Length: 130
Image 1 (cartoon, rainbow, N blue to C red):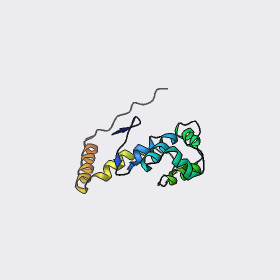
Image 2: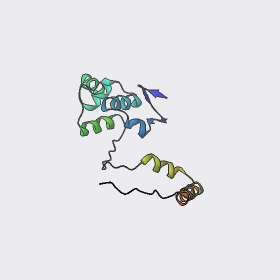
Image 3: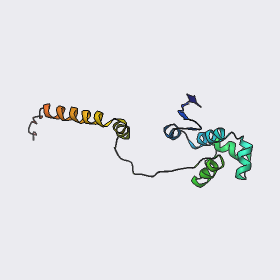
Image 4: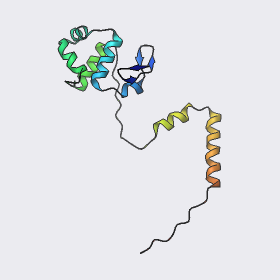
């Protein structure tokens, strides 16, 4: 299902976390408001602000601070969970794929890698030229 040009995989009343990570703050606010069934005016009233402020956030004309974004989401019935971690080269997709495997599938995967390594020939390196 596509929503606002983004693939959205809905789970009952919310998009999944991967779909949300592709949204900017304006689209995130709009999506949360729509899922809550609120108009911009109703959301503004809950936040003690104006409809034009909500419109400006949704159109990325103004970017709310993190604490304000958390209040906006709360007014729509959602919690904002943020995770800070150092960027690394870990392939999280591969980790998810491995975790989705059954124990027997994981064991077969390890056997395949072991066979591959056992059959691999070492590479002979030429001495460096001066």
